[in-house]
Image (cartoon, rainbow, N blue to C red; front, side, top):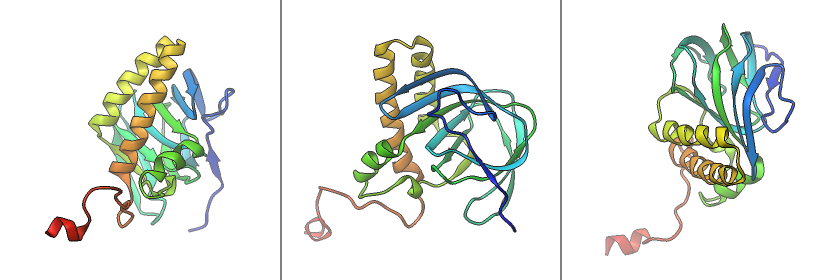
Length: 195
C-alpha cells in the first residue's frame, strides 16, 4: 500500500492547526494541554510531533483507522471517555465524519526522554498506539486537568505539570510495546530473590 502524505498537528504551537480548533489551552514545562474539536477527516495519516494522550469528550462517532506497524484496518465506535495514545512522529491512517471534541495531553521530547530514562532508557517510540480504549487512570487525570485548564492560574499550571508527569509515567507503565519491558532498578536480583 503506498504511503499517503501525512498531517502532524503540533500542540505546542499557539496558533494551532487547520485540523484542530482549540477552545482552551495551557502549556507548562514541556506539557501542552488542549481542548477543542478536530476537523472532519475523509481519510488521512494523522499524528503529532509530540507523544499524545487524547480523551474523547463529544458524542459517539465511528472511526476507521489502520495500525501504524501492520496496516491492519479497524472500525471502532469512539465514545466519550475513550482514550487514544500515540507516540510522536508516528502518523497513521484515520477517518471520521463530524468534528469530534477532544482533550489532548501532549508531551515534548525532552520530558518524554526524562521519564523514559527512569524506565531503562525507553523513548516515546516504545509506547504502543491505542485507539478507543477505556483507561480509568487517564480519565481521572484528564478530569482533574480539565479543572486546572479552566482555572488557568499560575498554581493551576504547576498542578497541571505535576499531573501530566504522573500521566506520562502511567503511559510508560501501561502502554509499553510487548517485548520492550524496562529493566528494573533497585530491588533484589534474581539470585537474591531465590535465596
